[in-house]
Amino acid sequence: MIEAMPIVSTNTGLHETLALLTSQLHPDANHKEDLAFLKDVLSEKSLGYLMKIHGKLKQYEKQSPTPVLHSAVCLAEDLAEELQNGPMEEDERELLLLLSTPHLKAVLSAHDTVAQKNFDPVLPPLPEELDDDFEEESVKIVRLVKNKEPLGATIRRDEVTGAVIVARIMRGGAADRSGLVHVGDELREVNGNLIIHKRPDEISQILSQSQGSITLKIIPAIVEDDRLKESKVYLRALFDYTPFEDRATPCQEAGLPFRRGDILQVVSQDDDTWWQAKKVGDCNLRAALVPSTQFQERRLRYRMKMGTYPAMVSPKTPTYDRAEKEDCDSEATLSGNNIAVVSPKRKAAPGSCGHAFSWDFYSAGLRRSFRLRKDRQTSPGEPRTPDTSHAEFLIYEEVVRYQIRCGERPRLIVLIGSLGARINELKQKMIAESPRQYGVAVPHTTRAKKSHEREAVEYHFITRAAFEADIQNNKFIEYGEYKDNLYGTSLESIRVVLDRNKVCLVDVQPEALKTLRTAEFKPFVIFVRPRIHDSHCKRLGSSSSLSVGVTEEDLQEMRQSAEQMDERYGHWVDYTLVKEDPVSALVELQAVLERVQVEPHWVPVSWVRH
Image (cartoon, rainbow, N blue to C red; front, side, top):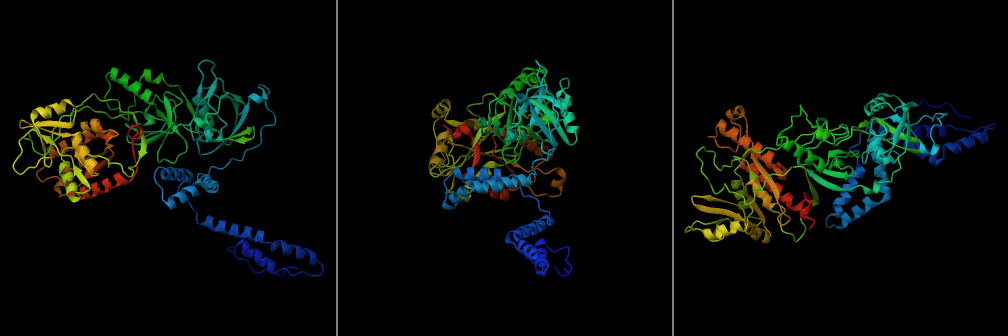
């Protein structure tokens, strides 16, 4: 017998309702055994726990939570790799051990699956009758269910046989993760309709416009599993790339846009023309297409031959040449779908495609000045560099993470500056602030020593014959002549500072970086440029490090100088310091230099692997 239940609020949880119901059970003579059984069931601890879990989940659902990130696994792997790259304390070893446990990996993987909403689709049953045109073992039946995640595969038409072939599988994409779609698979039917006479882009459009599920017939290619062949090459991009402006790409939707300075992880170089890569720091699991070094260099050489390089390709008027396009197959993307293979009984997954091409390279001359005056003359600060070889194509530079270890010499700090940056003044203030930590390379000169000057303090005083001999022996990173006297900065003077375990600061013409960018010095390059306010802000008295007597012509010249230096040498720059005023610039420079010596940075791989 159950007494009249008290009124239960809609906010009452299942666990509370269950307890209330149990308390109302009073067995009578006729149903004593049944009610006793029911009470035992309702009093079971496991059922109570389930009700509590249900209540907590309902409370959590009301909060409408959103994931902080979608790639906990990626973050954990990066952290583990970071820990392994250097000496570890006891708590760091413990953290690495925790990150390596299968249970934590499984939890993080489950988190990412929920965060990405990458749930298995609910598939309708297979058609009861299938055509007997193909041998059962040679046909793979695939069922597609619409999903936001792209498949990560493209298709093309074989020029010889006319077959529609899976042209490319993006590493890390849904198709790659499923292991059920491979390069070379032949697509025969879509929803029972032959697609032999349709173009790849027409097939892609059919798939994107279809609603619900899509059934595909695929003739599997005979391929070896190449999952273990994934490479881990890291490249610094030396140019900007926009896939949707590059009509030479086989599939624009599959392209990876990037900016100069971005670090790319190349996961596949199987295709000589189009590599697959991810941007470091991007949590997208799927790789995308980037032009290979060989292909990019080939088409730049073609443009040079045609007289169109160096040049800037306008984003609004993308161009390509027949010679470029002939290197690429026309492909179409399979996107917007989630794949599941019904026969054999394994699930599959989703895809995408896109890209454009542009680059910045100017050969305009760059004039350096130490004073904002029109009557400036040749100065010892206007050096020539020993090696001014012709510019090479700026495509990629292979890099690796590097951090200074105990006992190693500090990294060389190289300051380059545009017109009006006054980097020598900034360098001297930095050294005056911390003379025990920072030092400057003592220059050489052929002029006579003055009474107050000391050898190897202000200058190294040598004869003109000795100076010219050192020039012939490539001992200077740069040198110049001023009032019939030679001035220069030698490699040895830099080594002297570094051997004292001091951070050496040098300000040079950017051409000197060709000499300094070596494994010996591992330079960290800082580009200093003044913040230039427009004339309206200047008339209002906006704060600036520039002198009051600066004219509009001076401002324009400084702006052009900064732009030209960035365009010509920006690929060598590790940090850009925009100088608002001397005080804030000094504070910012101090913070940067402290990080350089203690934090890991990307450097050319040749600096680390000898």
